[in-house]
Length: 146
Image (cartoon, rainbow, N blue to C red; front, side, top):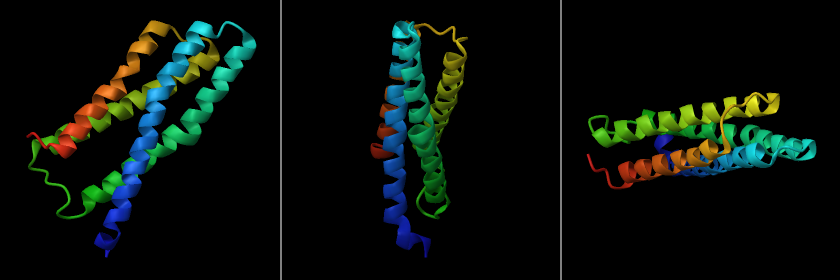
């Protein structure tokens, strides 16, 4: 019965991944601008609003949907071969993305409180983390090198 919905579950999983990644690409850039350009109260408020909405309305729900649909796919017999190393690499990469997501959420709270000690340069560098992990995940899923 669940297999009848497999294409829909997979499509919803991929849509959620794309939305989650968009948020993970954009949040560090917003934080960079918040830190480097946010000395004026009106600018700070604008960045705070943008960051909060992106995280709460798009990025976090997309992360949750990614996990929910991914777990449903993993629970379907015959879809995931746990003997293959690539699957464990993909899962580890997704866990790292999740940790990164929560790190970004914690930095948003610090930015709002005015206690964030992370530099603009660091946020700019952090922008590369989701890109690298996305490349790893796509190669593991498509190429299945191991």
